[in-house]
Length: 100
Image 1 (cartoon, helix red, strand yellow):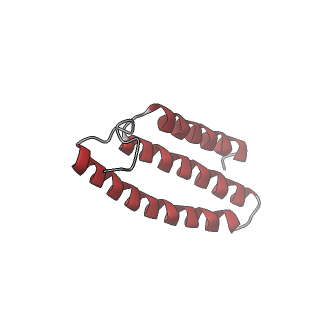
Image 2 (tube, rainbow, N blue to C red):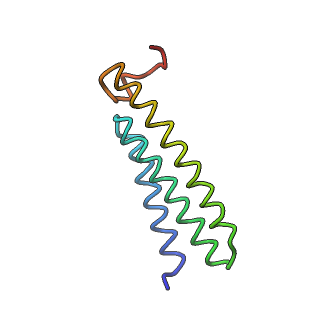
């Protein structure tokens, strides 16, 4: 059995990597992958705390976060594909406004 402190530390490291990826990278795909990494880090923390307190609330909440993340990924990737077809780039600096 892994101690909860170590699981929360791994979750914090993954969340930090996601934040760094969002702030540093310029490709929209990498930004969306970093956001997904942050959501998964939060899910890991929810499940670990739920397991430590012998409840199911954290696991249920993680399930809903996964459902929202799947919808966000579908809509986000559709927007990225539309922008790439129009501008031939996924650089976030080039897409400053949502004007066509």
